[in-house]
Image 1 (cartoon, one colour):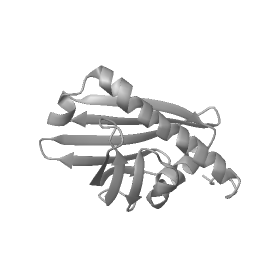
Image 2: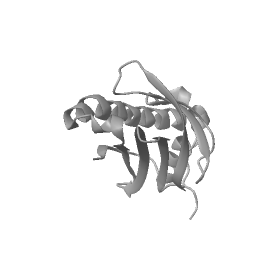
Image 3: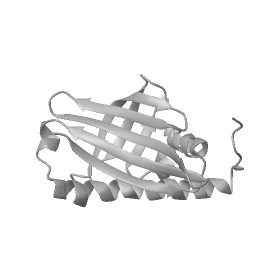
Length: 156
């Protein structure tokens, strides 16, 4: 049975602006407390080397090459990490325009023998706070970039 981590945050930035930060894997190390390093492109089928926090083991990290499964600028960014039989993680960012900004849904569906052992309480206790910390760090990154890179709407 699959387990799901689901969080959301309202960001006072256009979906296009949020996309530019989330799709910029080379700078994850500068702000992202969940996906600590990433190297690759945000395009379908691309392989992206990542090092990420392991919420199930505090202080531990995992290195894995994930595959981008969805990349629709300003709409959705998703990747899959997979270790046959043991683990599959489908990580997803969904962008929804809301109140002059973006409602970002940040989730992951976890399946395989390893996640099978995790309880819903463990997901809420260990995983959700790590994903929420990532959301808050993204908000801070967007705020910081306002002072460096002019914010402007992309023409339709």
